[in-house]
Image (cartoon, rainbow, N blue to C red):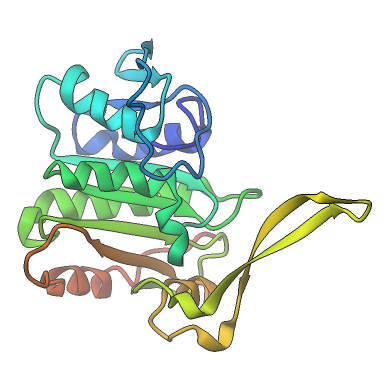
Length: 251
C-alpha cells in the first residue's frame, strides 16, 4: 500500500485494516503530503526512510519513490498487488496525469504488478469506511482472478462519491474538451497572485465518463491501459461490476 497524503493519513490506515484479511499488508508511503506530484521521482537527491510501526514505512520522497523503494529494497518478494489511497479528493478526467495517488499505482503497473488507485470525491465529511470496504472487495476480486481479471499493463482508477447511492460503473476518462483551467486572483488588489481552478462543461461529458458517474452518485472504475500491445479484455471486470450492484450503500 501507498498514497500521496502521507503515512499518517487516517484513510490509509482505514484501507490497511480493510485489506488485512486478504493477506500480508506492507505500507510504504511518503512521510508528508505529496499531492499532485504525478509520477515525480527523486533522481538528484537520496531518499531516506524510517519504520514508523511494524510493516509501515515512511519515505522522505514522492509516492513513486515509495513504490520503487518498496519493490527494490524493503520487500523480500515481489508483491501481488499494490493499492494506492485512499486519496481525499477526486482523481477524474485529465487530473489523473497530475495525481500522486494514480502515479504510484501506475509505477507498480509498469513493474508488472496489478495496481489499484482509490479516491473519495470529497475532502471533508468523508465516509472512509464504505470506501475502504469497497476497495477491499475489488482487491479481493483482483487477487482471485489474477491476470484473467485484470490484464497486465492496466491500472484501475477508482473514484467513490461522498454520497454513494447508485451502484458501480465501468467508465472512461472525461473528454479533454469538457475541461479548462481558469486563473483567478485571490485578492483583487494583487493580480500577480493567482489560483488555478478547474472548470467543467457538463454538456461535453459523455454518459460513460468518470465525471458523469460521480455526478450521478455512482462509483467510477476507469481502466488505464499503459503498456498493452493489444486492447485488453475487460469482460471479467464488467461481470464483476454487475455482480456488486447490490452491495449495501452507506446510510
